[in-house]
Amino acid sequence: MYLRDRTGLTFNRSGRLLREVSRDHAEHYDRLMDGGLYKTLVNNRMMVAHVERGLKFAVTEEAYRVINPKTVLLETYPYEWGFSQFRAAALHVLRVSQTALDHDMVLTGVAPGNVQFENGSPIWTDTLAFVSYREGGWQAYQQFVQQYLAPLALMAKVDVSLGQLLRIYPDGIPLEIASATLPGRTRINFGLMSHIHLNNRTGRNAGRATKADLLAQLDNLYETVESLTWTAQSVLWERSQADVMQNEGTFDQRHRFLRDALNETKAKTVWDMNAGAGVYSRIAAGEFGAAVVAMNDTPQMTELLWQDLSEDERQLILPLLIDWANPSPGLGWANRERRSIAARASADLLVCMGLVHRLALNSGVTLPAMAAAFARLAPALLVEFVPVNDPAVIAMLESGQHTIPDYTAENFEVAFGEHYDVILAEDVLKTNRKIYLLRRREA
Image (tube, rainbow, N blue to C red; front, side, top):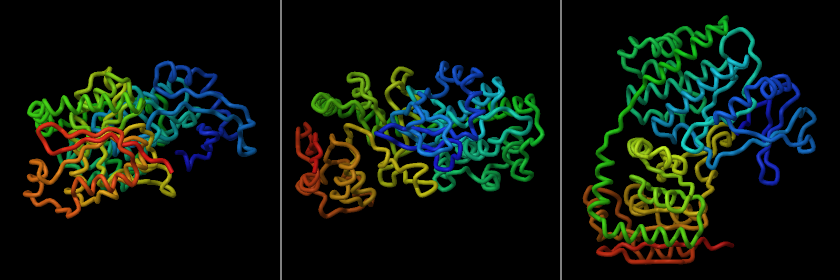
């Protein structure tokens, strides 16, 4: 969303995303289009393409052009990305900035919402963020440091979960907080010292910089971001792989059931809401060509899945960090600049294997509340019910998790029956579990 952007009013008409280019921005838009930058970025898959629509679509008298940008399958935000995805997005912004300077243009804003993932790679989405170069500092420098470099440094040097600070500070982490939180040893890192620690004290922004100065600054930022690394602990991944091997027979049944569900629903977009190592995601994408969002509730599993996917698999599978007990909320002005994950729902099929009992017992979410929430997200649901006498649930209860009196198979079917019709249902072999394919009952 571009709710604060005066150069490009954003609106929807007949289900189509349109942007108005204001007359004040006409010079910069023409330079983008006629000076070669637009063609370079689009041809190199660095920025989304757009189509110009007639002024008959304009909503104000200040319109110079009306454009229809290409949209991505699912808009995502940095606090939903794994570490490597976030770093790739930051490096992409710097590459776009360097390319713009080569064409005598600069980026005026680098909000992370303007970087999205398409076909496994980051892509810039804000056509109107470019202006003609004028000698002076990079206007978006401070924004880049606070919204990309500071959170990445905190994730790499302190704790990867600190990327979630961008939920609290959606306009960027204040540098006084970043500087105070980073370990003292980061002060011997030239990039972190100059861009975070000293920047925090002086507010430096190279106000009289030449183009050569700006290119050097971009190069240094690139080197600093590229040097940041984080390695996810593989314990959860190894446990997930062990579960697959231990339950090979029941997994074969589940895989076949998933294939039946995909054939039945003809789903083109799938949300794998508890993806783990991505077994179900890979079937949906690899065998059926579905676009899959593979969600995990820990940074470790999100990162490990991203690393494990091949380049070809990333074309269709997008790992995201989503905790369904505390999903991404609406943020920013009027809670509309960064929409909640539910407001962005666009799936044809939800796959909820091994999720219901975790939400119920770990987080105390009731079955009626789950059913209502899932029904708002997609028209079809593949879901597994794990009863209280299952070893996984017994272990959870013994470790002190919630006890839900109405957590029974009968109550599950009643709660979900309020919103869904049963299309397929099977008992899972050698267990007391049951899997269902449900279709939302339309009003």
